[in-house]
Image 1 (spheres, rainbow, N blue to C red):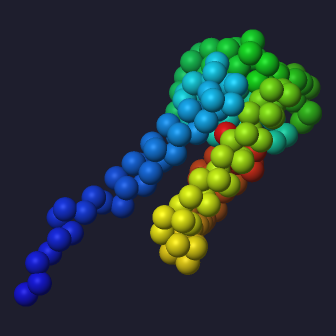
Image 2: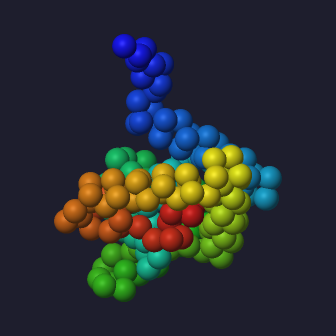
Amino acid sequence: MPADDTSSTPFLPQLIAQAFALLMDDLVQHLVDSGYDDLRPTHCLNVFRFMDCDGTRPTTLARRAGMTPQAMGELVNYLERHDYVRRVPDPTDGRGRVVVYADRGTEAAEVATKYFADLESRWVSAVGKGRLAEVKSALAQIVGGACDGAVGSNGPDRAGSSKASAS
């Protein structure tokens, strides 16, 4: 009977988490190297990743990130002071405010988008175009199946945008 070497192979969630950690570390370093040295991993992980293109209420950002509204408020305040985001009146309800990208935030998102394209090219070089396409297709199918009936493409109440995904 052949030896079972699956005991030495990490579980898929572990591999995904490790790949995500590498991706985020490299992204933050790329942003720092590109002149965005006042951004921290928490800004990418907990704010930009959950922002919608047309703006997102801070309480919604907090819920999506699994944070308290007060903690999210501190992150948004920091990003606003550094010209990455602005708070503007909510177009659907003038009593509220939404967080939108400011010019510097849009520029950082564009740098991140280019980084992701370059990263994908490096991964194609490492594993081949066909294998990477299979991984992307399988993950899209898994995510799509996990999100049946959910709002957006990032899971329950995690509606996202291409810009949100880029940062």
